[in-house]
Image 1 (cartoon, rainbow, N blue to C red):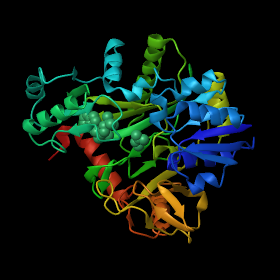
Image 2: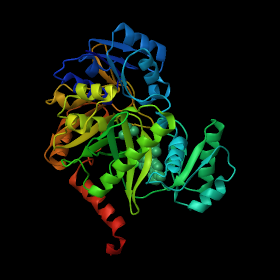
Image 3: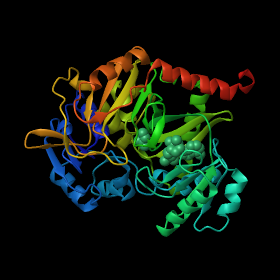
Image 4: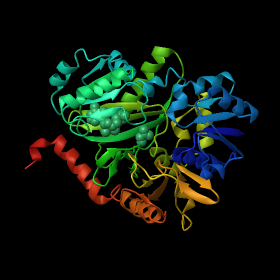
Length: 442
Ligand code: AMP
Ligand code: GLY
């Protein structure tokens, strides 16, 4: 069986490892924007090029006689790669272009949520000009709004009052910037609470949930600094999270289910791939932050590291519309994933600096991302460099494993030492407790 992975980051390295573990012994191929040596070591053939050049990717797929494709990142989904691959008779894990609007258009998703009365909704309005912006900002209040560009902006399209915007004047300036770029935008109520990722496998009809994961978007220890693609993640052995109740998890799954039903009703197309709801547990319950139409990065590494079932079988079931809950088993183990990133990341990272990971003991849990090999040297190219995952009975033990291993990656890199530590988790649990029971605050 020939399987194509589209994408070349650590998430795709995790996908490649999960495929490689399969007893079905597939032959793996990759189309990536860069040559990831970790993925390359697991593949029979590797094409480097623009993964949004749909015709080129389909041609590669046909040349390699691909039986099944898995699309890692969102950009090719937005361009309709899944549609084109299906059209070329290559079954594909990753939703078609219209369905991927769930991720690619924030206004579409908020409007869909409203139209179908899906729970977890919040106060929002869509704008295309400055008309009404000032009034709406005042209505939400000085520190109580978030502004989101409508479209894929590589993590730079969302600004939160109090964090990134410090006055109405700054907010208006950001809106003007977006209008100048021809972007519509959403202004919505700012929510306070703990965020979490609820990903599911989907075969167009059946949704099967993965363990919940919490990401850390901020660059520095203590959840400080600029937003990043995600510095690290953890998951709990019981597949919930320490600050969540089972009711919270059920609510997130209900929203995912309703969203799938709404999408299906809207487009009459099967959603095949990963449906990833990003939620926040608040005083008012679980609310929706956004949707992604793919695996999270780093979240993919947490869940795939403890997937007991055969990943190839799950992918086949997704594309054939035969997915069942019984097919998907995860170990009851905790995971902590940490990314090493170049000094200066994300705003002004050092680029093409030499790194070394020779002493690594557990290669199974090392995932390469923005690296390159030049003249035999391993270089960090500027984005997130490499991730490690600790897997153990408790989050704390998994954290210690991840920390031990990540310190073996040498070079001008840094990582967040606090992700998954008992101290940080205690803080999160306490914050949720205070939000849920404000009368307890002394
Ligand atoms: P998004 O791209 O929509 O995931 O937004 C990026 C980050 O902005 C999220 O991970 C949150 O930390 C923050 N964010 C987005 N929407 C909201 C909201 N309504 N309230 C508070 N924070 C938000
Ligand atoms: N971890 C956040 C994302 O993949 O979008």
